[in-house]
Every structure is written in C-alpha cells, then in structure tokens.
Length: 147
Image 1 (tube, rainbow, N blue to C red):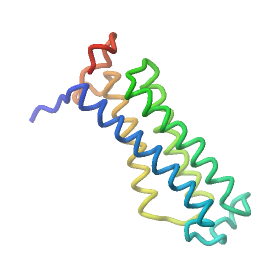
Image 2 (image 1 turned 120 degrees about the horizontal axis):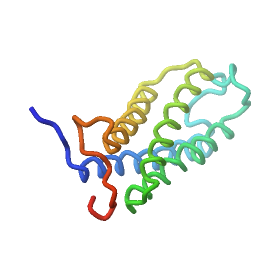
Image 3 (image 1 turned 180 degrees about the vertical axis):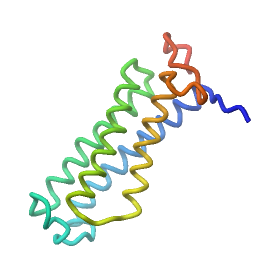
C-alpha cells in the first residue's frame, strides 16, 4: 500500500495536534493551580526544587502551552515559521515529559500519551520537510499552494 499523504492532510493533522497541545497544557496548568495540584499530592514534589505546583504549572501553561499555541497559529495561518515552531513545540513536549518523570518519579498513562503527541508532531514536521519521503512531499516553496 502506497502511503504518500497530501500536504493538506499533514498540515491539518499538525494543526490539530498543536491546537490540542495548547488547550490541554492550558487546562492542565489551570487545573493544577486552581485545583491545588489537580489531585496530585505534594509528596510528588519531594525530589524536585518546588514546594508547590505553581511554578511547574506556569511553565506547563506558559512555555509548553505557549509554544504549542504559537505553532498552531502559525500552521493555521500558513506562516513560513510554522514548521520551526512545530518542532520547538514537539521537542518542548518531550522535554516536559522527561523532566516531569525525573522530578516526580511517578508514572501516568498520560505521560506516555503526551510523549507520543510530541513524537507525532516531530514526525509530521520531518514529513513536511521532505525528510520522510515515504509519508509526504516536501514543504512547498510557495505556501499559498499548500491549502
């Protein structure tokens, strides 16, 4: 079975992933701050430099959610910087998960889900850059021809 997907399908998928990442990071940050850890006990922070979930969740909402949101806007608006921002957002998601695992020393299925989320964003960026030619054609020189 031949798999080259259209650029349009890949861009829509990338836009959906980054938009979901932004919304879920913002929701996670709000829940953790507004709901005092969203049900997570403070003992989870024993191996971290933090006494509360405020700073980690501000980073989650501001940095992780911010880069995801910026990438989503750039992809939807078909900006040239869209793939760079999407790569930054994907790597940011992976870094967040690795640091969270190292500091909390707790595992949740959500961490695996968001790890796959970040990997999927990076795979889509590689496909659109032409570095995964079996998946898609490279990013076009003229962005107006994409959509």
